[in-house]
Image 1 (spheres, rainbow, N blue to C red):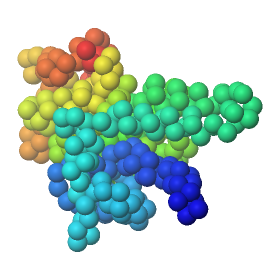
Image 2: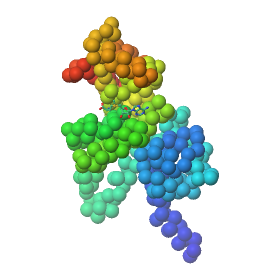
Image 3: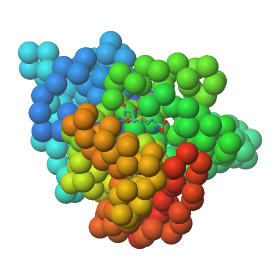
Image 4: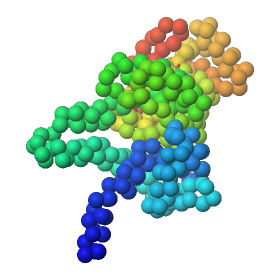
Length: 300
Ligand SMILES: C[S@@+](CC[C@H](N)C(=O)[O-])C[C@H]1O[C@@H](n2cnc3c(N)ncnc32)[C@H](O)[C@@H]1O
C-alpha cells in the first residue's frame, strides 16, 4: 500500500524538479556560475533576477545535485558543468530549453483531451517565443528595445547591459508596458563568456566604440555566437571614413575615446571585417542622420 502511494506521489510531483531545471536554464543560472563560486546576490546581478527568490531556486538546484553550496556560495556541480554551461563543449541547454517551450503546450493537455481541440493561443505563444527573439547588446535604457517590440508584435527583446543601466531599462520597460516582451539580462560584454544562444537577431548600438579593436572584435564574435544560423547582426556606430579624418564629428569623437582611455571610432570596413571573422556575412549598410549608420549581416 505504502509503495503504491509513494509511486503516485512521485508521478504527481515529477514536474517540480523539471520546472526548477528549466527555469534555471531560462535564466542561464549555470552559465552565470561558470567555473567559479558566487552568492545568490552576485548571481542575481549577473542574470537580472531578484536575490531572495533566486536563493530559493539555487537551494533547490543544490538539493537536486546540480549546484554545490558551501558557505553561502554556489558553484555548478559536475553534471551541470558537463552540459549546462553555455560556451562549453557538449552544451545541452538549447535543446533542454526546447522542453520549456513544450511545457506550454503540455499545460493545455487537459483541455485538449476534454475538447479534442488544441487551444489556438498555445500555438501563437509558441510561435512568438520560438520565432522572433532579439538581443539588444549594450541596450542601456531599453528605448530601442521597447520601440522594436512595439513596432513588431511578434518580437521579444532581451536587453543585455551592465547592472546599473538596467535599472533605467526596467523603468522604461514598465513605463512602456512592455514587460511581457522586453526583458533584461545583466552582464559585462567583456567578461561574459557568452551573451546567450538561439537569437534571431542581435542589435548593438553605439557600443563598439567603447572598446579597443581586439576587444570590439571579441564582442562581435560573442554577438555572432548568440545567433541562430541565418540570424541577423546589426551594428550601429558613428562610422569614420577610411582616411579617419572625416566626418569631423567622428574624428572628434575619436579624441573623446582617446581621453577616456576607452575605444575609438571605426570604419565600416573594420566592423565588417570583425563580422566576417565571426562568421557573419555583411549584407547591407543603412546610412542614418547624425553621422551614424548600421551595418547588417547574416550569420552563415
Ligand atoms: C552609448 S550607450 C548606448 C546605449 C544604446 N544602445 C543606444 O544606442 O542608445 C553604451 C551602452 O553600452 C553599455 N556598455 C558599455 N560597456 C559595457 C560592458 N562592458 N558590458 C555591457 N554593457 C556595456 C553601457 O552601459 C551603455 O548602456
